[in-house]
Structures are given as structure tokens and as C-alpha cells.
Image (tube, rainbow, N blue to C red; front, side):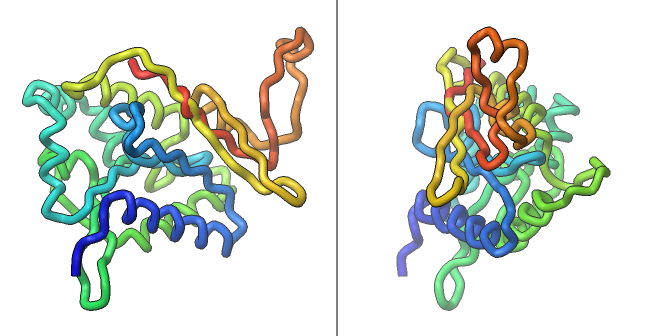
Length: 234
């Protein structure tokens, strides 16, 4: 039996995440950048609301090493010696891959830096546990901020931009747009924003700020998460 393609694996992950969110009534935006000009900055998928993670996908375990080919030796050294970047990576950046089973494939993930052979022992875990953990995290409304996985949206965005600046193909000034969809009445609505943090601002009623009173409207919709797919690569 053949191995599913990378986009099939990514699609299965998003579908499973949506099912788990639906079961619990959890809000979980997912921004898909795979095979767009922006995947060099933001990776294949960014998921989360108050706490977010970046995910890369590979077709199978044996292709993990190909991720390292995207990096020069100098870029790998810069990444590994940037202590704050390595800490952020351990919390919020994973690489997912498939492995054959008796009746199909299993999905697993490892820390992105360890997949590049940097800094830390490569520890893998099943993606169904990751999905359940992400949904539990999104539904946690406790005031404590000592989360075990993920970063606030602004911090994740800053991490991804800095990481892209180290990669050999990093750079460029292309804008990105983040997009979110949410149930609204009997239908759905789609909203965009220019940054992940703005997209995921507290989902409260549409408010009028001083800027808005001068004619500019900022979406702060309660029922809508927004994704900014127009982010700027720096």
C-alpha cells in the first residue's frame, strides 16, 4: 500500500482537529500556508487562539531529513545558538509525519529543532494526543499562563519571522493575510487580518475605538476568529 501525500496527511490532521473542536465547542482557528509563497515564513499550518502552534508536515518518517536541506550551515548555527529562539521552538513548533501501521498510517510529531538535529533529544508523540492537548488548551480559561505547549499569537508570529530571517531562503517583503471562519447565526463568516495577533484579539462585540470613530473599522468580532494571510515576511 502506498504512503499518502503530504497534503493528504495535513488535511487529515485539520479534519481531526475540527472534529475534536466540534465535540467540545472549542474555538480553534487554523491557517494553512502549505504550498503558498508564505510557507517559507509561517510553515505549513498555524493553529490556535490564545495559545498557538506552528506545524510542518512531511509525507513519511524517512523524509524528515529533507527539512534540513532548507537550511545553510550558517543558518542552522544561528538558530541553535539563539537561546530564546530554541526555547520558543520547543514550546510551539512541531514537525508531523506518517508511519505505516497494519491498517493504514499513524501520525506522529517531533520538535522542529530536534528534527533539524539541533540541541535536544528527538522525542516523538502521536498526533491524536497533540490534537486533544491543543483543544484542551484552547478551552482552558484559567488565569494561569504557565502553559506547557504553544505561545501567545504575537510571540509565535515574532518567532516565525525571526526563524525565517535565519533560513537561507528567508527574506523578502511579501505581505500575508491571516483568515478565520466562524459560525454566525445560520451561516458562516470569514474575516481577514494583517497579523495573527490582531486576528485573534479578544472575541468580544464589535467595538468603536477612537480610530474607528474617525472612520476606520477594526474587526473585534466575538463569533469570528480571523486569520491574517497577509503577513509581511521580514
